[in-house]
Amino acid sequence: MRPSVALAVAGAVVAALVVALVVLMGRADSSGEAPTLSGALLSTASSFEPRAHLFGEPVTARLDVTFDSTRVEPDSVQATPRFDPYTIASRSESRESVGGITRVRTEYVLECLTRKCLAPKSGFLEVPRSRVEYKPRALRDPLIASVDWPPVRTASRVGVKELEGLELLADVRDLPPVSYRVAPSTVSAVGYGLAVLLGIAGLVLLARALALPTLVASALARRRARLSPLQRALNLVKRSTERGERADSRRALERLAVELRQTEEPGLARTATRLAWRRSDPSGSTVDPLFDEVERVIAEEAR
Image (cartoon, rainbow, N blue to C red):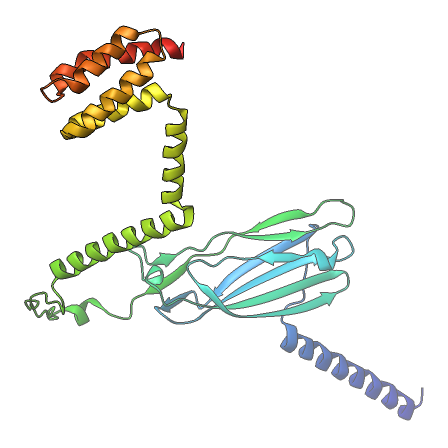
């Protein structure tokens, strides 16, 4: 082989090695270690950065899901992490594939400013287990993989020495006496009075709407129409006697005698006539026996 040809071949080999080295370095710088999978369909890896932090500092949670895309549907891989008591401030995702192996790296920036993130006695906070759902191509239903997160060490920003010498400050004051623009008794009296007036007004409006006076008058008229002449005459005697109307009582007794003559009780008719024109005025003691007998006659007629 000529020296020039050998030199050209050596130069080409060196150039190819340099190019391969640059490509490998670029891949290493851009994506880190190549994803690998040892026989399983899917594997997970979880971590926190930093592993220890002060209260209120942000924490980055990283979840790597590596799977065989020839045996697992890539779009079916879904992670549902929970980071209680932390909250997710932001989320980013990247994918890398080498051959048939795919790695999905998801980073969550977490923060927590509540009392639940204060440093516990153990100094470690534990977050719940996460779930990764994926569907193998050979199966009909999806599968679920569990992801355990490492505990995170958290510390307070206030040390024991900083708490020494602190004193609680308090100012005890007496509250002023309760005052009112209007006395409560006055307000309650006015309120009750207005309630009564409004109730009366409502009843008046209801009576007008239902025409109660007309209804009452018609009911009384119907009741009077149902009474027999003998009953009306007896009621007239009772009413005039109770009121002490002497002249009206005598006339009412004579009318009662007229109605009794139309019955089969002529003796009661004579008694009513005698009581109507006797010297002494009719009174309850003298007419009560007659009332009882007349009511008996009315009851017999009603049968």
